[in-house]
Length: 143
Image: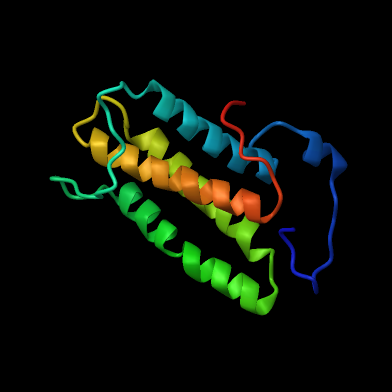
């Protein structure tokens, strides 16, 4: 599904079965499951806020994630209008890339911006789940 109808498809069966970052489906599902783990590990007093405000300036990786998430409605709209379903998995991979980059550079739990970051990763998880659902792929809570 990551290729347009006018592009040649090269299917690598071994890659499709591989459970690594090389497999784009696994990579996106892993981002979703990793966020589920973060949210499970958040203490009961940690609430995922619907208000996205932080006292500190956003880190570049946070800013990129927020900007990427804001693109979601337009990506879906254009994919629908152009009947170009391949735009959705491509977008999901980019969201997963941005999330992994953020995750490797910033602590979510027990950070000064914990409430904001929990809200951010929850939004990322929601967008990834919606992307996977739109293309008929499961969004696992654990991997």
